Length: 292
Image (tube, rainbow, N blue to C red; front, side, top):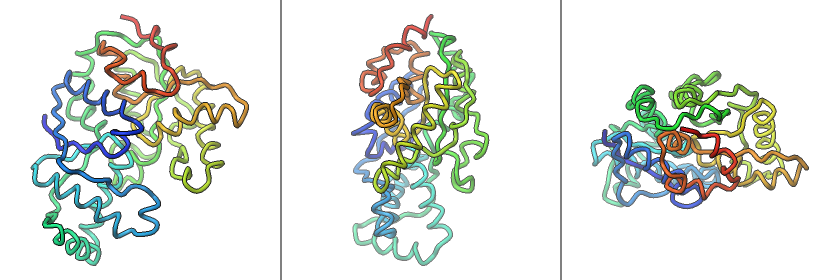
């Protein structure tokens, strides 16, 4: 299974552990991720889209054009990149005026996009093309003592006309994955609530309160870790967790894992190979719970 791999900015900077763990489990599952040569930012940054929406669309389309030359599905682990690239493809198919402007911009740099690329989330590749059965066959460590709160966030599942990973209101695929790895799934209030990541640019106070509500609801429901599939959500819940605790005078101390890190633990991959040493909230306390 071979895919045109779009890591996006965050996977090669603030959430490098997401890329490390994705590549680590891909080796086990025979997924070949061929990085798109000369890719650029997808334009998902809200500031870019708010000020120059056409610029953001052109940025995204250039990546689609590069992937099109590879004749493979474009796969990205970042939910923000997934939404941006998938929605751009939809816009180009439905808005001729925008497409004309984008085509003109691309011609100026010697390329074009024919509209043939399928944009997919890495989680969909793992769960659909590989499947739970093959994942189970590679489990070496049953995660039976882990109580996992799957966090879906916004951009994997909404809007359903663009994002078809799972049911928009009641997603279950990450919960099913946790159970396939031997863990217990935790149902909780915040699993599909917005973490407020994009508000970090404009209203930080609201953003950290939104993230706090998700973390506290997962903790209160009995979770001993959260699992995400979004770089920005992970930053909000993991990197900002100490700040949230200090600001609201609460104790949370809830490790937040990227979903490939959870899979990698079940596969018996060394924690450092999964980038777990890079997580801000230390996962050390849950590692003994992953027993063979």
